[in-house]
Image (cartoon, rainbow, N blue to C red; front, side, top):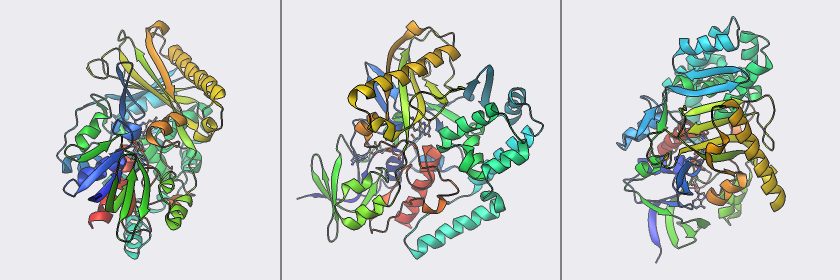
Length: 472
Ligand SMILES: Cc1cc2nc3c(=O)[nH]c(=O)nc-3n(C[C@H](O)[C@H](O)[C@H](O)COP(=O)(O)OP(=O)(O)OC[C@H]3O[C@@H](n4cnc5c(N)ncnc54)[C@H](O)[C@@H]3O)c2cc1C
């Protein structure tokens, strides 16, 4: 006889784990293909050291924000510490610290990119972001009258707070406030937007621009023991089946039948934390397959370099390096560096654990043969390390004890996704964004490929919307 669960969550990423944590009173199970919890935000062990696989910055853990609300709801206090400088930008000869204090930040911007309207621009960015986080119960859903009414309510709330500014384009705001800015200033803005929104200022709204540029105005945290340790806390006391991949889901009369690499299960409710692009493969039912196939693949992905570095240096938690040239085999001229705390006994056990990430196209790596793949991976990795050594020039090359890297193929091997990074909500696609609710009873999506997007804050908004859907 198959084991029956009230809810089966497939995937222990931010979405699956936060949703499961809010529903721990139910007969619920989480399946995770990998041996580590957390998907793009997991922490893994290699060569005796620990590494963050993608996410390194914990944001949104502040009163009134969905992430903290979810953590508080389950009474989980994460082991975190504030990063006083969210990240240091190194761009040509310039050094700009993204600090929370507005005046201190403005001072630096005025030195780096003098413009008489810098204050107006950045104050507006901060003000819009603050207004956004004051709006509670943001909901987006489709496929039922109730969902459309609730979504319309959210739109009305947004209009009330922002008026027409919701639709104003980012670039027109930049132009009318700052005028024709230098390419360097534009790169400074775009490099940050690529991290937070997976896109540049060219096709987003002013509100997205504000949200994308504002996270350093909030408290930014370092997670002791690696980002992955948050998932142990979220999933404590929840049945979690690691290294168990759901291979197939069959829609039967009253249930979904889940077939894994180990067993079979029945459930009335399935929450898919696999991406919207990958979930269709699990089904044979033509209607469900068609539904998932209706979403265009988001080709954005990540290239990640992991290093172990001797602890001979005093370093910040995060740096953003912006270059004048493109990184080979990537779609960006910038990369983000995260460094473990010296006193983090787990992450810095054998030296600093470093995660460096940039943006690339998933399809680029897929089409290469094995030899080309290894060559290009090496080329990108070495280019990034060279630039890192040039920009943080006190670091000696011989102090890098270990180095390896990951492309979209690596992410797919471990966590079933070629695409990495959320689906940027742009002005063109805002109404075709997938929602947690599907047209099929008992079938739900969660994670960064559905509303409201990527990272702890974006995924948490989606989790709250799904929870409303689920529990009324
Ligand atoms: C390089 C990089 C850096 C980032 N940096 C940050 C950052 O600093 N801060 C931040 O907030 N965000 C960051 N992000 C974004 C953030 O990591 C993601 O948006 C978020 O982790 C995605 O969560 P998710 O819920 O979509 O789940 P995912 O991370 O996609 O996890 C899904 C899980 O489901 C599992 N799964 C899939 N299919 C199956 C199956 N059939 N059976 C069983 N299990 C399955 C996978 O193994 C995986 O563990 C970064 C992302 C990347 C790629």
